[in-house]
Image (spheres, rainbow, N blue to C red):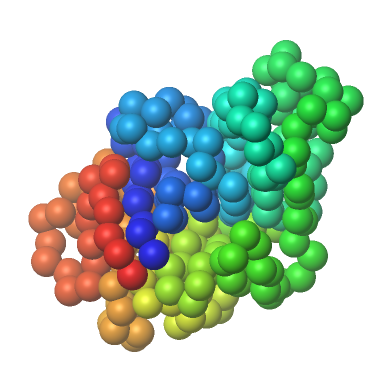
Length: 243
Ligand SMILES: [Zn+2]
Ligand SMILES: [Zn+2]
């Protein structure tokens, strides 16, 4: 699989918010500004067929209406428009997408349902496996303070994405079940909502696998860059690798 870390930042940074593109067709999270970020960097958003949303905060899903409008406009121009977009996320994700369309004064509830080929899969369990567009997705419920439920994902038993979470058992499951994990490393020291450098050091030492730090605040990025930590990768937006 080709993995592209489109965004590695937190809300408060110049970096794009945390999101990842796999094989140019599966996206984990869709923060504000993602459509433009993809277009600026010569990606083809119309190829994306699957979107995994970790939780309903704006820096993880605010751009969904812009992305869906773009892709639907593109698909209408294509003769074969049988493809649908699948959105997987926590319970209530469909209602939240409709609310966003309404908030932005875009399509109404009825227009979205009539005109857009979107299939929603709302996660019901703490641990769930889904086959979607030839990908095997494991969803693990993680712990992101008051924002419930929040999920992390493992794609094809290779790439883990923790989403926003404190260090918890299911974050460890994500690392255990992946070859490489893209992990929330917002803070120097983890709290009840986000992991910190201390948690990521613990995970790399325990599981001896590489972790790409994401969702980093500037202070965390600077501190990580100064240190030499085996197996912790601090990368720029757009970093690519194959797994
Ligand atoms: Zn969040
Ligand atoms: Zn976030």
